Length: 270
Image (cartoon, rainbow, N blue to C red; front, side, top):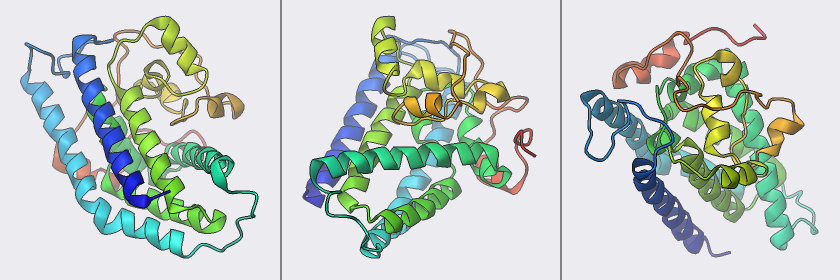
């Protein structure tokens, strides 16, 4: 596949999904909170939250071409060359997507179970409600660590850059979707949830109860949690509290400094 085409496709896909659900979640919200900006209603707390989230997003966008992209390109250029001939074409691409999604499931799970990684990942979870901006709210340290670990996977499995770019586009679009506050027809969401992560699944992952926070780790496919026993039995409700149990969200500068101190209770295995 042409890499310029894939880059354009990724930008177009993510931008379109972001625009659609940013508007849709304000027209047909599934939940309500003074922190969520609505048409005709804009609270000071809501604006502060949005600016805080966009600040984190901006840092990551600025660092991506400087750190994340070079790591990914370097890994693709230094693969071990062990990819078998049968692992090619469209079936090979499908297998690449499956492998990358399995990796991101375990990486996400590790971010909850290892205290060092949780210090970074907690910045994402400290958001006290969810909308499309939450999907891109991450500490830049987590983004860099993720790129390094993924780079090792690219080297080990000789993953083509095209597969990685396509997966990035799919994952970002899906993350925007399942973090959004969009109200979906129940039957449609139930059907989608059998295969992919939906808002009803992922909002439980952001429930401000640690037992639920440490569940529903899937990013694209929903069957990994069922397969590895990490699916929560909790069902989302309209006013479900979101965030980190026992903690409140922080200012932008304090969020940047969050990895320097312990955030929340230790993982259950400590």
